[in-house]
Image 1 (cartoon, helix red, strand yellow):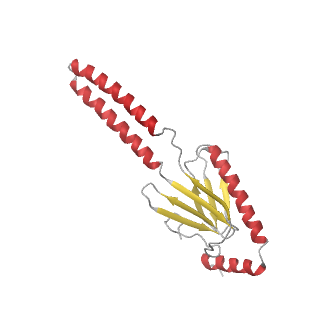
Image 2 (spheres, helix red, strand yellow):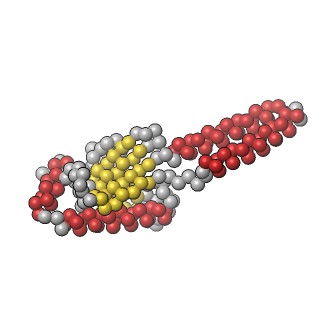
Image 3 (cartoon, rainbow, N blue to C red):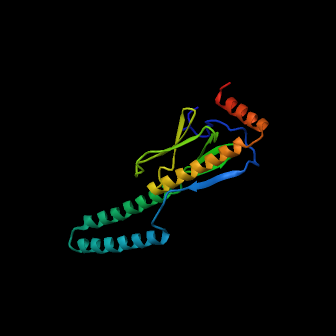
Length: 195
Protein backbone atom coordinates (compact mmCIF):
# COMPACT_ATOMS: atom_id res chain seq x y z
CA UNK A 1 0.00 0.00 0.00
CA UNK A 2 1.34 3.43 -0.91
CA UNK A 3 1.96 5.53 2.25
CA UNK A 4 1.37 8.71 0.26
CA UNK A 5 -2.24 7.75 -0.40
CA UNK A 6 -4.89 9.04 1.98
CA UNK A 7 -5.98 6.80 4.82
CA UNK A 8 -3.25 4.31 4.06
CA UNK A 9 -2.04 2.06 6.82
CA UNK A 10 1.62 1.23 6.63
CA UNK A 11 1.15 -1.28 9.42
CA UNK A 12 -1.00 -1.75 12.43
CA UNK A 13 0.55 -2.17 15.80
CA UNK A 14 -2.14 -4.30 17.31
CA UNK A 15 -5.44 -2.50 17.06
CA UNK A 16 -6.87 0.76 18.23
CA UNK A 17 -6.88 0.40 21.97
CA UNK A 18 -8.46 3.57 23.32
CA UNK A 19 -6.78 2.94 26.66
CA UNK A 20 -3.23 2.72 25.23
CA UNK A 21 -1.11 5.28 27.10
CA UNK A 22 -0.05 8.28 25.02
CA UNK A 23 3.70 8.81 25.18
CA UNK A 24 4.03 11.68 22.70
CA UNK A 25 1.43 13.93 21.09
CA UNK A 26 2.28 16.92 18.90
CA UNK A 27 0.57 19.16 16.38
CA UNK A 28 2.78 20.69 13.71
CA UNK A 29 1.83 23.71 11.63
CA UNK A 30 3.65 26.18 9.39
CA UNK A 31 4.90 29.37 10.99
CA UNK A 32 3.30 32.60 9.81
CA UNK A 33 5.24 35.53 11.26
CA UNK A 34 2.86 38.21 9.98
CA UNK A 35 -0.33 38.19 12.01
CA UNK A 36 -3.73 39.65 11.16
CA UNK A 37 -2.92 43.15 12.43
CA UNK A 38 0.40 43.14 10.57
CA UNK A 39 -1.34 42.01 7.39
CA UNK A 40 -3.80 44.92 7.57
CA UNK A 41 -0.98 47.37 8.33
CA UNK A 42 1.08 46.20 5.33
CA UNK A 43 -1.92 46.30 3.00
CA UNK A 44 -2.94 49.76 4.25
CA UNK A 45 0.61 51.06 3.66
CA UNK A 46 0.77 49.56 0.17
CA UNK A 47 -2.67 50.99 -0.71
CA UNK A 48 -1.76 54.49 0.51
CA UNK A 49 1.54 54.52 -1.41
CA UNK A 50 0.03 52.98 -4.56
CA UNK A 51 -2.98 55.29 -4.65
CA UNK A 52 -0.75 58.31 -3.95
CA UNK A 53 1.74 57.48 -6.69
CA UNK A 54 -1.03 56.32 -9.03
CA UNK A 55 -2.83 59.63 -8.57
CA UNK A 56 0.39 61.53 -9.31
CA UNK A 57 0.87 59.60 -12.59
CA UNK A 58 -2.82 60.00 -13.43
CA UNK A 59 -2.52 63.79 -13.05
CA UNK A 60 0.60 63.74 -15.25
CA UNK A 61 -1.40 62.08 -18.01
CA UNK A 62 0.02 58.58 -17.59
CA UNK A 63 -3.36 57.07 -16.69
CA UNK A 64 -2.43 53.41 -17.43
CA UNK A 65 0.11 53.49 -14.58
CA UNK A 66 -2.75 54.00 -12.10
CA UNK A 67 -4.25 50.67 -13.22
CA UNK A 68 -0.94 48.87 -12.73
CA UNK A 69 -0.72 50.15 -9.17
CA UNK A 70 -4.18 48.69 -8.60
CA UNK A 71 -3.02 45.40 -10.10
CA UNK A 72 -0.04 45.39 -7.72
CA UNK A 73 -2.39 45.76 -4.75
CA UNK A 74 -4.61 42.93 -5.98
CA UNK A 75 -1.66 40.58 -6.62
CA UNK A 76 -0.10 41.30 -3.23
CA UNK A 77 -3.42 40.62 -1.52
CA UNK A 78 -3.79 37.35 -3.44
CA UNK A 79 -0.25 36.27 -2.50
CA UNK A 80 -0.96 36.89 1.19
CA UNK A 81 -4.26 35.00 1.04
CA UNK A 82 -2.58 31.99 -0.58
CA UNK A 83 0.17 32.07 2.03
CA UNK A 84 -2.33 32.17 4.89
CA UNK A 85 -4.34 29.37 3.29
CA UNK A 86 -1.27 27.11 3.13
CA UNK A 87 -0.66 28.01 6.78
CA UNK A 88 -3.78 26.02 7.71
CA UNK A 89 -1.91 22.76 7.02
CA UNK A 90 -1.68 20.62 10.16
CA UNK A 91 0.15 17.42 11.02
CA UNK A 92 -0.44 15.52 14.24
CA UNK A 93 1.85 12.83 15.53
CA UNK A 94 0.74 10.56 18.35
CA UNK A 95 2.92 7.84 19.84
CA UNK A 96 1.32 5.24 22.11
CA UNK A 97 2.63 1.90 23.30
CA UNK A 98 0.65 0.25 20.48
CA UNK A 99 1.13 2.51 17.47
CA UNK A 100 2.35 5.73 15.93
CA UNK A 101 -0.37 7.68 14.12
CA UNK A 102 0.48 10.52 11.73
CA UNK A 103 -2.49 12.56 10.57
CA UNK A 104 -2.16 15.31 7.94
CA UNK A 105 -4.99 17.82 7.54
CA UNK A 106 -4.64 19.75 4.28
CA UNK A 107 -5.73 23.40 3.97
CA UNK A 108 -8.88 22.22 2.17
CA UNK A 109 -9.78 19.98 5.14
CA UNK A 110 -8.85 16.65 3.53
CA UNK A 111 -7.35 14.29 6.10
CA UNK A 112 -4.77 11.59 5.43
CA UNK A 113 -3.63 9.15 8.08
CA UNK A 114 -0.74 6.70 8.45
CA UNK A 115 -0.23 4.13 11.20
CA UNK A 116 3.03 2.48 12.18
CA UNK A 117 4.20 -0.05 14.73
CA UNK A 118 6.52 1.85 17.13
CA UNK A 119 8.84 -1.14 17.42
CA UNK A 120 9.68 -1.14 13.69
CA UNK A 121 9.53 2.58 12.99
CA UNK A 122 12.77 4.46 12.33
CA UNK A 123 13.12 8.24 12.33
CA UNK A 124 15.77 9.81 10.09
CA UNK A 125 16.85 13.40 9.52
CA UNK A 126 19.09 14.43 6.64
CA UNK A 127 22.48 15.62 7.90
CA UNK A 128 23.63 18.31 8.16
CA UNK A 129 20.39 19.82 9.38
CA UNK A 130 19.60 22.64 6.96
CA UNK A 131 16.51 24.21 5.43
CA UNK A 132 16.14 21.45 2.79
CA UNK A 133 16.70 18.56 5.28
CA UNK A 134 13.79 16.15 5.62
CA UNK A 135 12.40 14.10 8.49
CA UNK A 136 11.56 10.62 7.21
CA UNK A 137 9.62 7.94 9.04
CA UNK A 138 10.51 4.50 7.66
CA UNK A 139 9.07 1.07 8.37
CA UNK A 140 8.98 -2.12 6.31
CA UNK A 141 10.26 -0.39 3.16
CA UNK A 142 7.70 2.42 3.33
CA UNK A 143 8.61 6.04 4.01
CA UNK A 144 6.71 9.15 5.00
CA UNK A 145 8.13 12.68 5.09
CA UNK A 146 6.79 14.82 7.92
CA UNK A 147 7.15 18.48 8.89
CA UNK A 148 8.58 19.86 5.62
CA UNK A 149 7.53 23.36 6.75
CA UNK A 150 9.50 23.28 10.03
CA UNK A 151 12.66 25.31 10.62
CA UNK A 152 15.89 23.29 10.88
CA UNK A 153 16.06 23.70 14.68
CA UNK A 154 12.45 22.56 15.00
CA UNK A 155 13.17 19.50 12.86
CA UNK A 156 16.13 18.49 15.01
CA UNK A 157 14.08 18.96 18.17
CA UNK A 158 11.16 16.94 16.79
CA UNK A 159 13.42 14.07 15.74
CA UNK A 160 15.02 13.99 19.18
CA UNK A 161 11.59 13.96 20.88
CA UNK A 162 10.23 11.28 18.51
CA UNK A 163 13.24 9.03 19.05
CA UNK A 164 12.87 9.38 22.82
CA UNK A 165 9.13 8.58 22.58
CA UNK A 166 9.78 5.52 20.39
CA UNK A 167 12.43 4.36 22.85
CA UNK A 168 9.94 4.71 25.70
CA UNK A 169 7.26 2.84 23.72
CA UNK A 170 9.71 0.02 23.05
CA UNK A 171 10.77 -0.12 26.73
CA UNK A 172 7.13 -0.36 27.77
CA UNK A 173 6.53 -3.02 25.12
CA UNK A 174 9.49 -5.03 26.40
CA UNK A 175 8.02 -4.82 29.90
CA UNK A 176 4.56 -5.98 28.78
CA UNK A 177 3.38 -9.49 29.67
CA UNK A 178 4.40 -12.15 27.14
CA UNK A 179 0.81 -12.84 26.06
CA UNK A 180 0.23 -9.16 25.20
CA UNK A 181 3.51 -9.04 23.22
CA UNK A 182 2.48 -12.08 21.17
CA UNK A 183 -0.89 -10.48 20.37
CA UNK A 184 0.83 -7.30 19.18
CA UNK A 185 3.28 -9.27 17.03
CA UNK A 186 0.49 -11.33 15.46
CA UNK A 187 -1.57 -8.21 14.74
CA UNK A 188 1.48 -6.47 13.20
CA UNK A 189 2.25 -9.48 10.97
CA UNK A 190 -1.38 -9.73 9.83
CA UNK A 191 -1.47 -6.04 8.92
CA UNK A 192 1.76 -6.21 6.93
CA UNK A 193 0.90 -9.48 5.19
CA UNK A 194 3.75 -11.42 6.79
CA UNK A 195 3.24 -14.82 8.38
